Image (tube, rainbow over all chains, first blue to last red; front, side, top):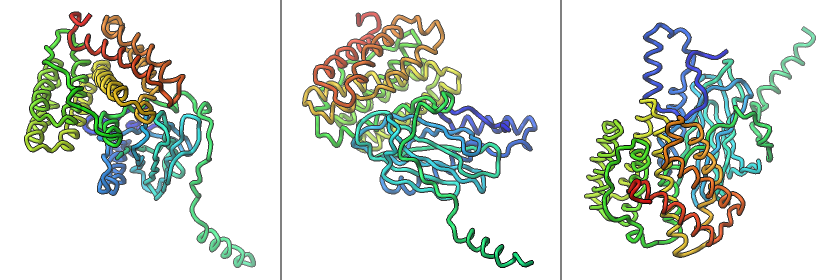
Length: 156
Length: 269
């Protein structure tokens, strides 16, 4: 099932989503709003906070959408050798668990470390070469048919 | 009830076992991903590249600054490209630690944003750029320019001007690439040249132009930029991360020429 707030994968602008949410509420669709991506974005920023405190610059943009159980999505990113990156993913769905892992353009797992804790997950990569990388996001467990997710990243 | 001990043992065992372990495969086949599962490239913000350049040495940033002030074009596509271009110029001025130039660029950003109806989105940023330049808070100014770029794009997306929003990014990338190639060729190193290895990003910008409205696609400047991207694409793809000095110079000549047209319009021909 796709919730009324389901949106295709795209860069998110929080204000716009909040505005969209407000409009939906106004037209009486509140009962269908099981999960919203903007809440997931807030959780993703929460996951990023410790890294911000460590000197990472966290991008204001976020990426997200919704996925079915065990579905995977690849987010491609241009990364630069010399920087360190943390990718942080989160969902607002209680009881859901998810994962994010980083692969290079040949499909090799390249992350230096990763973690997964309930609705949060993170992966760090120190690119050995400048080029295209893929953050593979996946819903591991969820009480919902579709689970909203959001991804942010920081660098230093 | 005779199975009770067995049941309890199973319950205990399940409690002790960790939750489904998230062990990622060491290798995946990216081509297995359906097209819908791979989405657009995340375009890096300029400060990601400047963060690396900071670590590569101390180039002569002042010599990279462009002279003069660009006039606001009447053509909205060129205005969007110029806005991205000028924001990228702001990063150069920050690296050169030229407070006056930074403030002037902040004012230009405001003027150009006004011309494409997104002035409101950057007023606070531009004021902050001026304040932080006065107090020589260069890291802060850099963050404000990053923020200005993202705010302008967000405002354009809100206005359903996604095409123009892409042109802002493209304009910034073109000026950033011109400066990067200039710095790399003046003191060539493999690590420096590798920063240009951005094949997917070049293809992405090409695809963006391809999906723009026919009116924009036929805009002579936009069309010329697409031709330029198609010349850069093979250079940064085929050589892998090892980009030669000759290719760095080639990319520099292409981006310089196209940026001149963005700044001067048809006078730049």
